[in-house]
Length: 159
Image 1 (cartoon, rainbow, N blue to C red):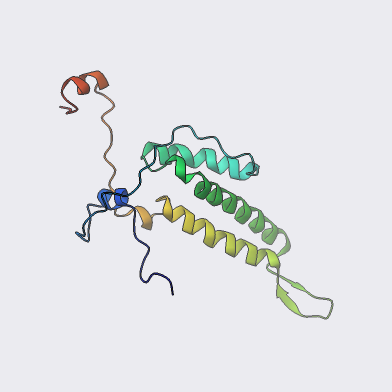
Image 2: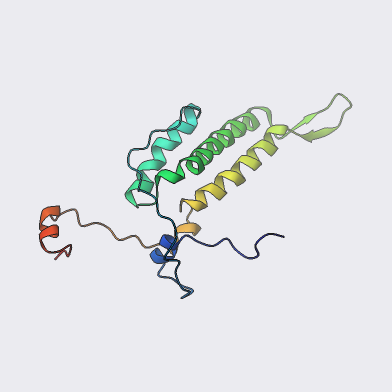
């Protein structure tokens, strides 16, 4: 039997949320280098690469992307592409079709679209890309007006 209850959140996500449960934070959680300028994997199709290029800057800006996240992000992007493709087919051909025996059944594309959408949503939630998944996040905006050297000379304290 698997672990009960909701999946545990990463420590940095708990910190961003202000540790609402007031539970002891995991201080020995592995950390990964923040990713900057990640290129989309070559196996992604055209639409998935386009989604990658749209989402990566958003995640980088908020410090939510590390080098260890590339496979999960690629899975999100590919499911996004699969969902869009299946929805296009459903729009063209409809939700159902009639078999050679006269039975009206759901098109396979409807199931493909639904599955891809569920998978896409679960990956999107992991990255805080849905409204409900980011309601408790508070990301401190960097003060871009101050020179980083001045901040360094003050001992890392701005203002």
